[in-house]
Amino acid sequence: MPHEDQPLRSVVPWPLCFLFLVPVMAMASPLTAAEDLEFEIRRLLAARDLGNVRAGIVVLRLWNAKVVCACNADELFAVASNNKLFVTAAALHLLGPDYTFRTVAWTPGILERSGVLRGDVIVRGTGDPNLSGRFHPRPTSIFESWSMGLRRRGVRRIEGRILADDRAFDRQWVHPSWPQDQLSTWYCAPISALSFQDNCIDILVRPGKAQGLPLAVSVSPLTSYVTVRVSGKTASGRTRSALSLSRRPGTNEVDVEGEHPLGGAPCRESLSVHDPALYTVHVFREVLIENGIEVAGGPAVIDSPSPASEPPGLRLAEFSSNLLETLRVTNKRSQNFYAEQVLKTLGRERRGEGSWPAGLAVLADFLEGLGIPRGSYSQVDGCGLARENRFSPTQVVRLLAWMHDKPHGEAFRSTLACGGQDGTLAGRFLRPGLKGRIYSKTGSIRGVSALSGYLYGVTGTAYAFSILFNDFEGDGDRLKDLQEAICEQIMDWDRAMARIDR
Image: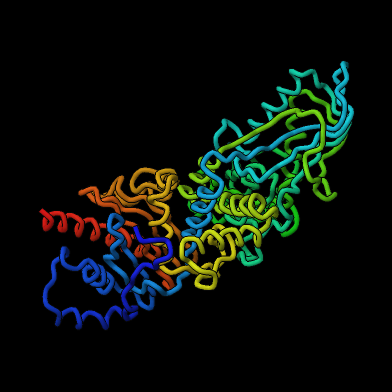
């Protein structure tokens, strides 16, 4: 692996017109895959009708830090969700895999022997993205456990309100660079120090019992926080589904429009909510009441400045989760909400401010320590949804190489999707020789397809690689197939090199 302050070497950027490369290759003397991996990868690219696609590729053999392929290595590319690699690596290195998020319910009031709690119940968040049903039977399982715990302590009535303390982060819930017409989608979920169920609500749409009847709609978790307005109708069984689900900006009013065929399969979609901290305590209050605890006051969010430390009071319940588990969701499932929660947590822990600017400043310090200086890239969010995030393939591979041999290197690799086995790669790299040997982060936004991570050859040799495509139009599956073909070529080259070494 290269020294931290020694940049990876790369070749001069190669022409972007693959058709121009074909006659040049035809005149060159024949090369085997074992002699020149880069030639073989260029030939793969030239053989595909990619139009004006820009491609950037770097492959680094880790044991001797040798770059064995470099195509447009130092150009900046939009990286989509490959942006998450930088956030998760920094969090693992700076906070450690055992870092713990804690969400606490407490009260400054008094619990009387009669079972009356005189005072507010405050739920204080520190950025945990796991307060949900992801690892539990139901979305409200954690709140149900809290409620039963309160009942065991004798609580039968709460005289005060259920307050949300989200002051560990700022209240810029949505990044200004995210697509404004997509903010009700799950992948644009708002970011908050106190969050619940990925700050989304699941909408299940079924056809009515007869053609022309309104669609049947249910929500999970079942809550009055969201109002659903259904104008969609049940269509003929021969009709294709044409549903539209959206949340009105700045509200929690959901519109279900369009049509769904009679007898059609249920359609499920997750939509983001407005004001996530209020959503959290609203649902908690409902669960308390469902479990036999009266609550006199309503849900609300604390607006006063954050105290320097948690004030004294009676702790009622607590939920905690682990950073490494969080990072596995972030990378394997490419969960945007998780990435942003982690980024703001970095800002709070290292700069005392849970905000995008503070988190990005921590990342800039981290990357500078790797030899990736400020100004050589662009990063504006954590998840990669913003189109302004741009890195070079060399910079992505530098990060991967640096992390591979660090104490948390194995933990970092465990956060990545494994080809043919789990995460976003469960259905890819299924061919013999590839399955179980690719640990990577996928990435895609309009016009962008990215794949970066580690490849482990059959000889035991490890490689770090980054394959970035920008400016494509049409079916993104074609670029995914090409990424797999490139990885297969690396694997073949590794085998050939092993034969030569013998």
